[in-house]
Length: 235
Image (tube, rainbow, N blue to C red):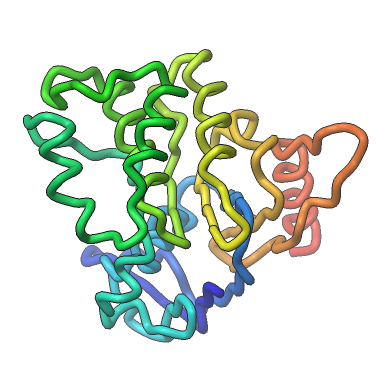
């Protein structure tokens, strides 16, 4: 269970991203977090990880305040930010360093994910392109075995084939108790994965609902446009 309870967050320059914001996600499955630029999607992920703290209200995961940075909760969460770098070390050395932080880390699943991405496990991280680094890091994220996995624009920088591989990798890493939250603008890359969508704006939550199975896949881009336009017409 993820809860935002009357959360307000403002960056140092006075730009308020979230104001009295509330949202509840029951957990289990793949959630899509959609919104215009500047509505606070990335900020929400960092608040859930406890990397940012709200000025008002609170964010909880499994009823634990994320700002406390509880070690048990941190061991059950993993984030793949939109931009990051990896140290210039071998993949094996990197995995040896972080695997002990995650009690359910699976070396077998890591090897399986890397294989799906057509990546060799015997690699040096410093020699990889940005797209290759993203594949490796997403493989590590899934192998961590955490119940909560947050991804910010995970398909940015991936080529067409890699985006297809990404969907396969995510599906292979899912389990009934796992919750994956994907913040993205590239909705067509992930719409076949998502079974619940939350659409937010600067005014709050516009839509928070499961996606009902239909004969044809739901067009998330059209759903987003219609939801935003409907809210605008009511204002």
